[in-house]
Length: 542
Image 1 (tube, rainbow, N blue to C red):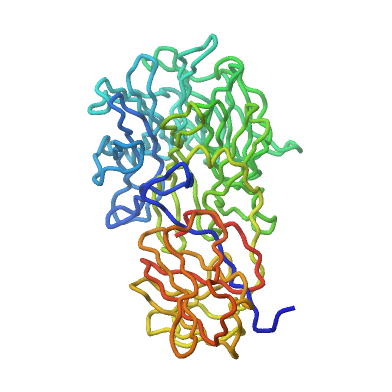
Image 2: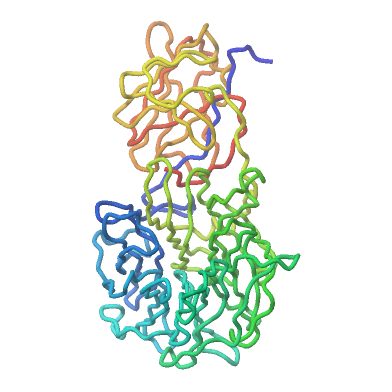
């Protein structure tokens, strides 16, 4: 057993967001963050479409004003473009639909219709008794759009259409049918009735590319195994390889599934699926390679004590059997204090050998900044298909967990005394525990004074978490030897994502009583201490 001075500074996964993804790296990266700002309290619920000239059009809900960005706040539909398969995006919004409803317009779906036109669907929210989906089409690749056509004329009520949900059937006797999955909460003809939060599921259907619409035969609810009614909100649909349609809804028990064999008119009973989650929406689409891709808040990745409604982690998984089983659960976002939901999925690039990329756009609350963002992440196919762990491990109590978060210049701990210049040292509390952080800047410094001289080899597995994905990132670890600082390790942008970033000392036999951590970073780095279990914490937790 090593001396009492031995300790482990546990590493978490790096948040390296490289400016480009290569086959060798094959890691997800953030290509756009549309953060809330002045008179823009929220950006959310978008959808993608590839244009004929190869550009990608992304349209999303852009909220206005100084309120809290609630679902009933003023919102327009705004657009951004990418000319390089989502690697970069235009920097200015183009307003596609100005709010012309009583409350807002929001929650976009985009389709390339089989007649070649573009179709845009969204919710026109006039009141809590009148929220209905509408459709517009474009003959000029989104430069201009037709007038809005209601997908639901009667009965008038509050119908929720999530973003990126509408499909057009590609095979079978109902080929060409448009299906708009809806959760109905109330009817305008029954204002005296309470708002039905649990909702009933239905669909709007069109067999003529949206010229005319009708409601599906079925209007149905969800129940648990004991016959008690449960939530059935925010449905989505995906076409299966056997010509059935899979419908999925969120509930307080997880994702419920049912299927239709008649093009969405009637459905089997909703049953609990293998995708366990909080009452938060999943997104499911078929990849060009044939598998179904699900993106959802994977509760199987959390211990039971943390399944308390939080919308995290945000995970991916694939299915080879039309949704019966799901493989390769991967946590894309794992910050337990943050939240992630309302995902759009769009495949780009060359999928002939599963070498394409999936663009994911989702709403995120970033706990570290106390703000929200609409985040676009480029996810390589190799990441999706690589087997991954299903369970996230939560770190146990560590040396710093009893310390009060906040700035310090001198900090006494069980493993030694940390010192920092004013404004450069922080005790940082995170969902993984508490650690020591040096803030961003040009070679900001933390010094750890050990109680007695110790071999570097007796300090195994020292590790650091990159506190932000932004560049530059360069951290030097130095030991005080023979009256001078001597570099003994370095972390820089060559570090790959999703590996345990342990410090490897170049001269492990050196003896020192003092270590110096110097960082040239935008937001700094976080140092966790010993006896903690590593929890894979995802890529994008800044």
